[in-house]
Amino acid sequence: MKFDREEAARFHRGHGKPPGHEHPEHQEPVQEARHAELRTTAAGAAGATDTDTADDAGAQGPRKAARTEIEVRFDLLDENRRDAASLRERLREQGVFAINLMSSPGAGKTALLEATLPRLGAIRVAVLEGDIETSADAERLAPFGVPVVQINTGPFGGDCHLPAPLVADAMEKLPLSKLDLVFIENVGNLVCPAEFDLGEARKVVLLSVTEGEDKPLKYPLIFRESSLALITKIDLLPHLDFDLPRLEENLRRVNPELRVVQLSARSGDGLEDWLKWLSDELGEALRASD
Image (cartoon, rainbow, N blue to C red; front, top):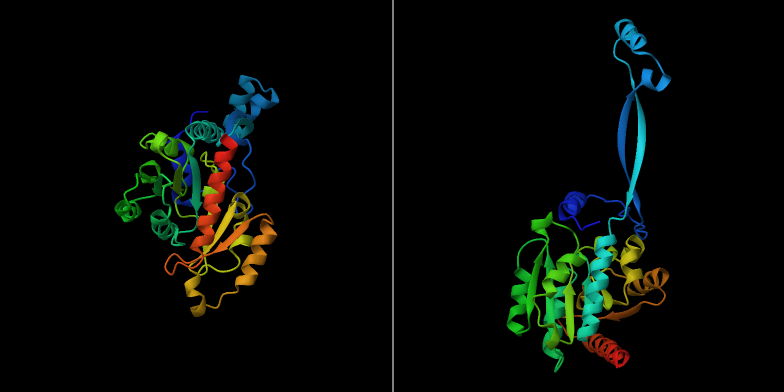
């Protein structure tokens, strides 16, 4: 099935739920049935003659229609998976490590990049900036002198996530042969982005301390799919009624293998732990490619 942006827009507009988007469990989308109805006359279903139908119609009025249901099965995410697999292979061939940054709106993805980019040293980096509308975040990153490509889903129905075809198109605008690392800043949402493979090497989820300790339990898929959880805005902890040990317990319940780093992009606390994780992952990927 060819990726149909109009179809995606129809499903996602207004937070609609396509097949496979049942919340909150978010199981892996499978082939779903779409239903069409064929109507036949009750007389035809019962084997009545034309004469009988005409006579009965005069005596009884219009007949009720019988309904036949036909299932047409297709996988809505199949095209996305194919595009993601193709992009992953392309990035591997170019030696580029891609990280998909996901979070709810306002958790601090762009602030994290603002704190990270000047600390990467010789690592050659670019950013794909995803939003429904505006280029505000891309403009915030422009002063750092790295390639930044804006992706807006608004023209395609305002999707609450980046799909692989749009990411692949945006990658065409980057000098991949001259890069080591690409950050993909996804659209702010704790739900849909986790379902869509973008060809990335790692998924990283951000959760700010202003959002509450229960989010891993309410939206488990994004934490199960991620390799690292960044607990952001920890400089605000003295001003909040927030139970950090409880959050970490909830994270372990959802994903016991999830690495957790606490940081503040504003104060700089914890940034070294994030940068070490990043360096370790890049080094491991480089060794694996040798």
